[in-house]
Length: 300
Ligand SMILES: NC(=O)c1ccc[n+]([C@@H]2O[C@H](COP(=O)([O-])OP(=O)(O)OC[C@H]3O[C@@H](n4cnc5c(N)ncnc54)[C@H](OP(=O)(O)O)[C@@H]3O)[C@@H](O)[C@H]2O)c1
Image 1 (spheres, rainbow, N blue to C red):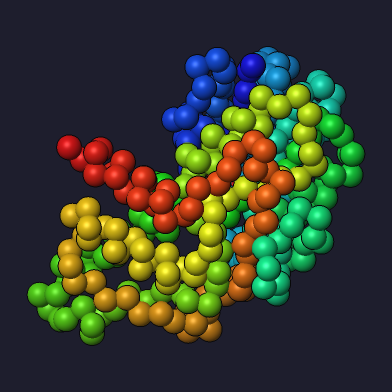
Image 2 (image 1 turned 180 degrees about the horizontal axis):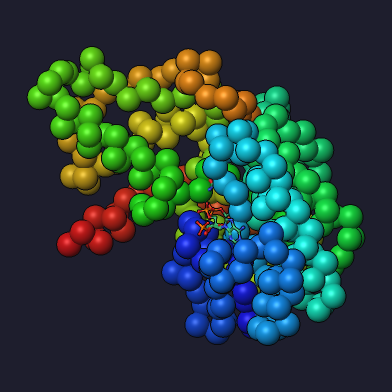
């Protein structure tokens, strides 16, 4: 099985490499090698490598910047996927397109199923939804869409690494003020499912081994929390593992208090049940523990 990923340096592309099965061949093309907004580069890459499956790990993922520059987000997240679909279809190559919980508006209070109609509330979500609609319009058994949420790892740029950094800094600043005077403010009115990116990558490898695909999959770790509750858990586990100091002060805030130009869904938990035949998601707290343990081990 030969798998090609567009995107090499991103969070998911790296995870696919880390958990790559021995039986699979993995070709990863960086942004420098193939800019996916250039259709002829996509075509040349597919003609040259002739993979069985493409996993599109390339995306414009900065939600704040996408709001300021929606054209760039559309070009990378939607238009490029159209080029990819066309080329993949011509060569008869299967394509897994990654998508997001942000295609939903967050008005639900129960997990979103794959049959629920998306409705977006920000430019990033709109660009990802347009890509979904393009792929679905092919009605092709070669294509599938996989939505996930709140990806993290102990390396790279994500909520966990940001929190670990802030929590360490907050402690260091205690020489000039108590942590209670300088709390880390975290949004407490957005609920989702944190997902350890290696778990998600393992799910994708399982999906690659399937002969037939559904049109849309949902997969995340199990359970739900707010960003504030996620931060609390990072703090508790980080202290227990000796990664963080005892005195860290977190303050829950509302989305309104968090200075952002982006509307984010208040509730974006995905109903993953139809994907459980491939991989049963483990509780997010347990997988956070695994991730932080790996961080501890990487330091010895
Ligand atoms: N991160 C999350 O929490 C999350 C949640 C739900 C869904 N997703 C989806 O999961 C997928 C993977 O996300 P991720 O977190 O791995 O993203 P990421 O870490 O931001 O990586 C994105 C990758 O895309 C590459 N890229 C950007 N523009 C490109 C272009 N024009 N041509 C080729 N490559 C380009 C980037 O390369 P350079 O850095 O070199 O530009 C980078 O390697 C995305 O589709 C995202 O929408 C992510």
